[in-house]
Image (tube, rainbow, N blue to C red):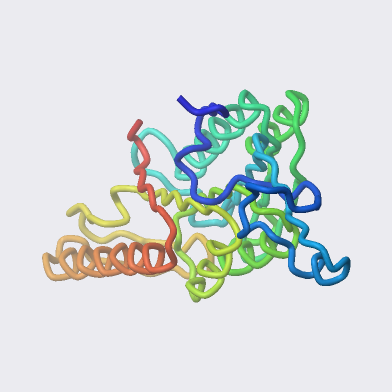
Length: 254
């Protein structure tokens, strides 16, 4: 029913208006649009003219750290992240929007500036499938700071990660004020429940630390589940308190 129809624009917050020019005030103009600096300079009222922005810039922040090379169902977390990112990229290009990508671990691994076009999308898909990270850690704050520094205009950003990272609450708040930010958290069922399979060796994919765990102990399994629940609740609290929407997906789910 709107003059400007779009496929997914309406679900995102923000004005969607870009400054166009300044012109002299005419009877009936909205006084809230008066540009007081120009008015003072010329001693006559001038107003700002805005135009509807129909073109979005979509930024994908992709976590390619070591912890995403894990999965106990039909796919690894990284496979799910790749699929979501590809779907978002194709959706954006179908809507004639620009798409850019920031690949990150505990550093910025690669930045692909936002552009339009099918060849650009295919390049992004190739990078999603083939890119190998130099580092294995995770630093979400670093990725968000990089986003706010390189993308000056308001954009729609998707942060796709397992959120196994520390101290990113402040960076998330700052980024969400500047951009329309959506968080998508990927997890695996074995990150919250441990099966009873006796003594097993577990390795931290990011630090390389190896430990032996007695999964036959009910106390150990309960402790593991409680810790995982606490971690999940903490992620939800941080994201929601930053004013960011959160979607949660598990490996093996559609």
